[in-house]
Length: 216
Figure 1: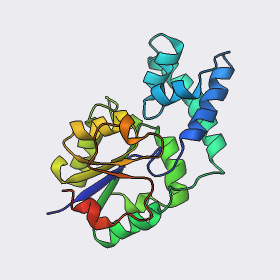
Figure 2: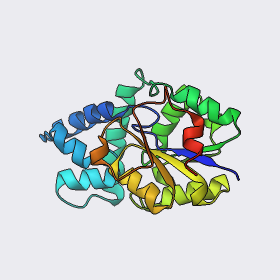
Figure 3: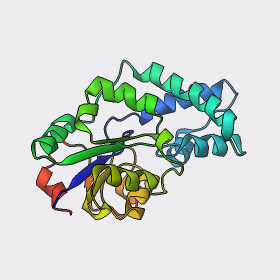
Figure 4: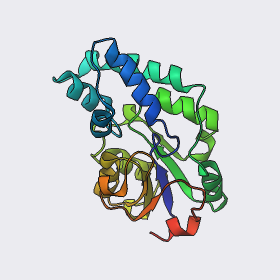
């Protein structure tokens, strides 16, 4: 049976959340808004920009306004993060190990494609992924399962043949809603802050491939 592994990006491939915090703090400070780290933890990590903007502005942000605000914030993030791109410990070795076993792999992020391209180009990810999906490729964001169901379709496997690596409540929920097994990456949240996962890791250094594939 063909098995597939799908990775979220922020907090799963790279620990980008501190840099997203920096970008959002700068973005909001220009508007005399100063959210706390606790508020970011609850309402930013793993959320779509539509949700984040609407929550902090206290009104629905969508359409052209969302596109403009999102472009401003994500440009700030890329500017800040460009010189700091660093995968979570052991990730690239783990990914290379999966490819050596002919496991199909994909990335499914709520971030815009420009962010994924920045990280993917730096880490040479795209030639190792049979499916690459970002926020532009779906109509419904996590916790809706669309991005993971679409990934399974691209990878030519059933959802039950997939293991997803996720770090956020909405991301884990999306994977569970898609009928997939989930590895919780504890980069931004504790076990208690996530829905129940099939396996938990701090990083990839001591993670055995069979421990993941045997979940299916």
